[in-house]
Image (tube, rainbow, N blue to C red):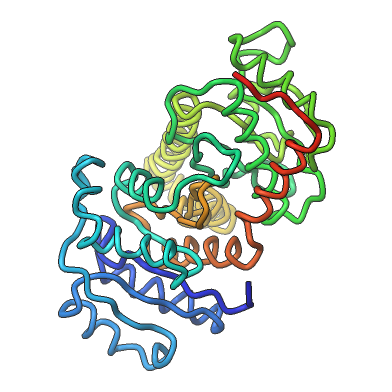
Length: 347
């Protein structure tokens, strides 16, 4: 992988469409001029938007896609139209080797289904998982997976998620052996379902892996910085993520209400503005935008549908970093070590 990743952009996806995605590409290119892009979407809409940016010359191209995947569309319907949609064609560019990664703010279920069918999973991976960065009080964010791609998982799936999450953490945090923990209803070894306990046993049986397994963690400790990677099935992981996001919004609303309740509180807001600004930045989902489908033979990054241009640019930065670091190769190498060590991953 060279230092100049070529990224395929689903320019029509998301709540606000091409205005935001093109602006996001412009923002990303200002921060990383080595990037190159192909925007997939309606050329009649994209061409005027692209023409506004002189810096796009020689760095950004347009590939016409006549159709768009809607936010409410079923994955099966999106799959049938994949050869005509901006989402499907962006992923096909990764499959065909024309792009190093794809980024979309479109329908999550459709994106997952299209990516899985087009790219397939890495040898040794049963199911891909959706991973993202969550804020903590520690020195860096944590990697959490799965966040909704698989509602039901067996022990082997969770074991594979641990391998993939650790590889992701090594890239984004530059940690030789990330600390991995399994989400559970308690930290004691006897707590949780058979699946979670069996997954823990599998991870412990693979000391050759470049990670430190540190047992279980409860949801109320997600933000304490006690782990680099937290592994869960997609059902529990999605609930934990949505709860964290809802709590962040709730805190922001409480603060806003408190500082507008009286003249005295408004004056207090003026004095506290620097601290409030830091808090708002820490809670803003745009700052950590960009979830990745790990376990596929190509890199696909999911942006929040409501992300701002800066948020979409952050998702692009995630895709570029993973492409440069060859995330799929790293996962494949760790899996090969597991096979060499004869670790029994049978569910």
